[in-house]
Each structure stands twice: as C-alpha cells, then as structure tokens.
Image 1 (cartoon, rainbow, N blue to C red):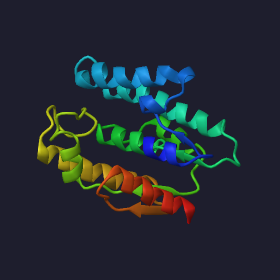
Image 2 (image 1 turned 120 degrees about the vertical axis):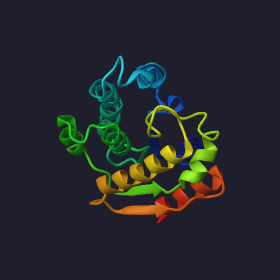
Image 3 (image 1 turned 90 degrees about the vertical axis):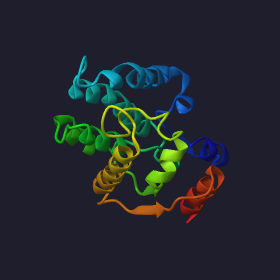
Length: 189
C-alpha cells in the first residue's frame, strides 16, 4: 500500500495499517496493535473468539465509514476491506455471526485485485514464522504446516467471499515494486 499510495496521485488508499491511518483515526492503529499484542495471545483464555471479532469489527466499520465518506467520483483503493477479517474470524471458529450479514451489506467494490502469494513465500517474509500473530496460523505456535494449512484455507474463504465480484488475480511477484506495478497495470486497464 505504501508503494501504491506514493505512485497513484489522485487515488485515495485506505488501510488499517498504522502508516496509512490518518491522524484523526489513530485509535484504529492503537486498537490493531492492542489486538495483536494483548488480545490474540489470550484468545481461548482471558478473551473469547466473539470478543476478538467484536474488536475486529471496529476496523471493518472504520473502513466502511471511510469508503462512504470518500467522493464517489474519486478513485479509491481499499486494502482487504472486510473480506480478510471476515475470513479470519471464520477460521478462528466463528462460522456464523450476526455482524457478517451486516458487513456483507456494506458498499461493494467495483472490482477486486487479489494478490496471490504462496504460503512458502509468505512464511519466508514472516521471518519463518517469527513475525506471525494468531490470526495467521493454526495452533498456539507458528509452525510451517499449521501456517501453510491456514493460509490455504484463508485464500479459499476470501475467494468465496468475493466470488460475485469481478476479481483479477495477480500472481506472486519478485518484489514489492513489481507487485505495485502489476496493480497499477490492472487499475489502468
């Protein structure tokens, strides 16, 4: 998103990643950090999966709010929207939840660009599991087979969620710069 933001003048990019959250919405970045550092390690213990999902809902609603408050004539690129969070909640054991129907009622994108990265590459990029959180692998510890299985299921659920939308798949690229270029090519088409 950083590379795309810098190279797409006139486009608005939305994400819940800290560096892409506007100053007036820093709460979103703090909540994300707190979820990763404080809540995820305690899911199944101090916190329920439902509690986790309710916190993740803040990110989903924040992105929806930003989409709705953007000039409809302005081009907009949104990182994951609610699709990835919904898929991760389902993989965490919340197959159905009343908020899913609400999320699915949010304004839909005109198109989806799916960046397809192999589990092997994602594992390597995560420092062989060292930088993973509990919503990126099965089990309590990041191990290769639990990560690979989770990532394959995450891909399946995300594609299931966007099946009614026009989806362009971008295969794995050798660098961030090449990935950003591939996305720009799709956006220009």
